[in-house]
Image 1 (cartoon, helix red, strand yellow):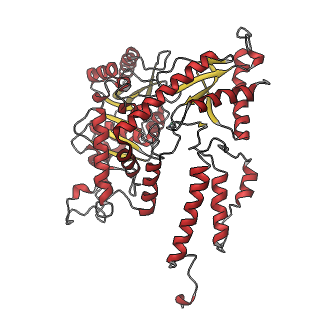
Image 2 (cartoon, protein in one colour):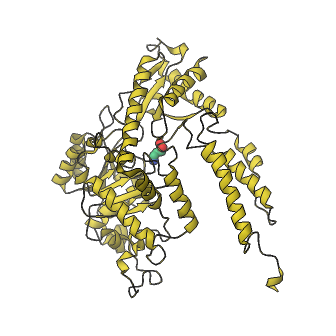
Image 3 (cartoon, rainbow, N blue to C red):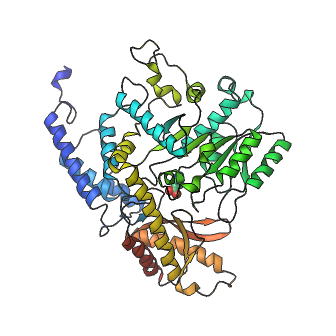
Length: 493
Ligand code: ABU
């Protein structure tokens, strides 16, 4: 009976499958790769949510649709999506498009496997091991462990969990009952995932002691010492310090050597959240910004950011060689990790993580690295620093632009001061009025589709723009455009 019913669309029709995928690939090449990276096209096509819902016709129906309609839907999805590969997309810590990495992502998606066992991911188990080994070597470790995680926040949470487990292995079984009140330390400039991680792991956000940062956004080691003493005096047990290499807004690098000294004195786990700044390790000229990182116990490094590998690619690297990851997270599921398999079962890495199914995140980085070589990647980093310098000098030359501070990384924070506010710094409402400028300009640029750049307030500072120089194809012309466009959009303010 079942055989007499037609199969759902394309099932079993090899020719139609290939035709569809070829057609979709042609659309991707034309609409994402060609137009999406062209400065003469829009970076985004803004629509209000209700209109966008109508345009996309999102509701799912019981009746399938013909292929031509499906292809139209693919075009619409691309049309109304933000082109993060566009040379005028400056909004996030990731941007641009690396062709080899994209090739890796396409192959990964097509093979659709999970990283947990060697039997279903032989290539990727070995490849992940090799890529992590290379990243560890850049940190300065000749041995260790690691895993690719679904994003930097999760990598940071793993670090917290591992540090806690190492000190209190009982907590795996007994949970919070096995623990005294714990304290971890990070700076006021840290990524918000540290607090989220503390909440998620049952420690609570109160267990996160916020250490002061200096005017450049760097953790102050003396205040770290003070916070540790305070926590102890209040009956908490310090166990981890999370330092940051490349803070989200200012792009600051914490003084790792001095922080490592404090950790050593107090026997604390040192985690370095280098999700953003880790890629600087590839540059012989700038890697000194992370001096001392080799003294960390764990490091988060997101190649999907500055290396333009594509979301997502976040490595948690460990100095540990005692199988801590597996001991902390393992659950020995007998249907996946049989110990009597015909191959070396240590290659089944699935029990290192809390996930079961795990995406393959190593191929895109491996393929890109093979194609560019370490030297090509180093050139990209150096180029981003050089272009940042160009932007800073241009900002200094132009009327109406004011740097928040000299950057040490590729985050350039600045105000655009519109004509009506120039020379009015002493006015009592100056800061309030300046704060309104960035949101207005943001709305204008997005509705125009001309560019995207982020803004935020910061402490007592009024809203300012945060320019990220990360896209490997950026050139001076794109930097000039950014400044010209802000002047154009803000000339009437
Ligand atoms: N996790 C990084 C924060 C997002 C961004 O500014 O791109």
